[in-house]
Length: 116
Length: 115
Image (cartoon, rainbow over the protein chains, first blue to last red):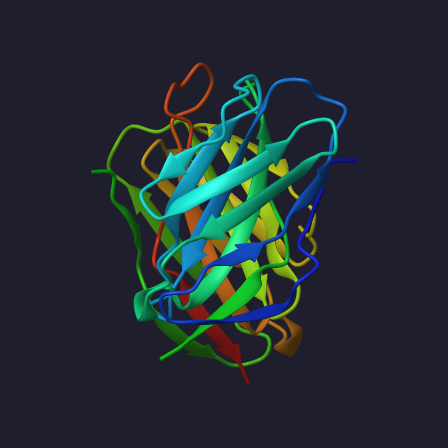
């Protein structure tokens, strides 16, 4: 079965500092996508970053970057220069590549607090 | 940009009522999903649909049914609401097979309370 595990229910970071959120997953597929979604208090899910498994280069989006270790099945999110607006629930998610009936599988989430 | 609209932001219902949660997307997406979000459990898939009138059970379908008569609309039905169905419900859509720029687009959620 495909699973996604986030072992940190809560994290805290000082404003302007760097924080890393952990995610591991289990799959027998070789081609897939991994995602980090952010859910602020407004409840609207926002895509933070996406990684295609066939790409060796780690994805980056401004202050957000990932450390993708395919062999270890690890996909961590690094937030640099943390801002108050980064405070949110962060979900790691996985979907196999291709297939009309594929579904996105989520982890249990990490609640990030940013201290001023 | 894609818009996924859930008809209610907050809903309060009584035990035993039949409840309809509606979701509409405006980008001709093939796949639509209903998730349930509970603290400590993340998002769990209830049902999804990969085409009109086509549906598949997710991980927790018990007590729920769905309807997709038109491509843009995906309804979640609680046949007889129970207190353990108090939760946040999220609808999402995805273009489908062969899509580039793969991602899920979400609605803003419906917080359902069953009393």
